[in-house]
Image 1 (cartoon, helix red, strand yellow):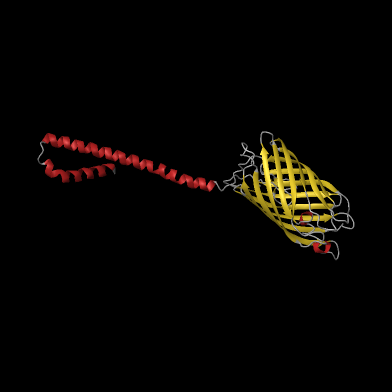
Image 2 (cartoon, one colour):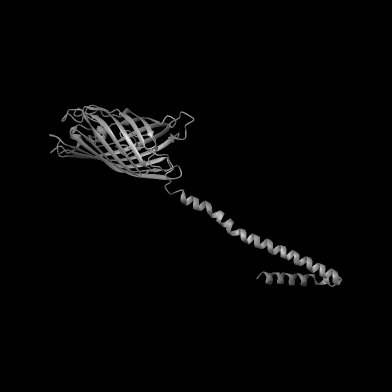
Length: 342
């Protein structure tokens, strides 16, 4: 093919140059023909080199597209334990209170998700909490959670209360891990939409409104600030919550004593014993809206184990205070939470 092209080019050149060649001597014509052949050979080599470079250029042009495809795969890029565990209402954080951290191990170019189950048992009650949560671009968190409360002693032996919780959290500023050179914590704002599904096992009492609650649905608003001190292996968190919820909403919202939003403080501290084990404490203030429920503040001490980024387990001693006047004693017990995801 190359010889054909080369021959054709020489023939065309000879035709166009015929008037000039006719005036040259034999030696001049031979020199001129040799020069044209050399020029044609150089041109062919340049064309071959350009053709060989074309696939590489095409590959380089498509490389960003492949990279763009990979960025939407879960990358598990965050440090172990920096996604927190799942809080009893479904948000990423500690056991009792949400943190500013976004759940999952996806970085700002990826996402993470998990499924979780929590079992909390006291002398008179059992609380089950389960659901799913998704963290997107390490900035937005969406969660869906269900709580079920059961009684175990008379007169509440057959009690069953459940509620559904939908949560949204957005990171506003800072980075708990990478901002080690300044004191600004990671800050996030969140909302929890809660709906109480009613009461079972109490005969004619089927609604939390019959216990004095103003409503069976409510919204919690919160602002969390979390700081991780890597050199000290320490996590500190403070959350301010505006709420009307009685016992997180399990006994409704607002009540016969007061029906207004109140600011409640929630605090956490955790020490990372090693890369897979964390020891911590939490304290959560509670409103007191119902005459039938002398609600007390919550607190716990927990041990969280992270065998891998796909699994975590949390064991805690928890105190929930009084829960209704029908079983008037401090409720203390154990809390076990399992979380699987990426």
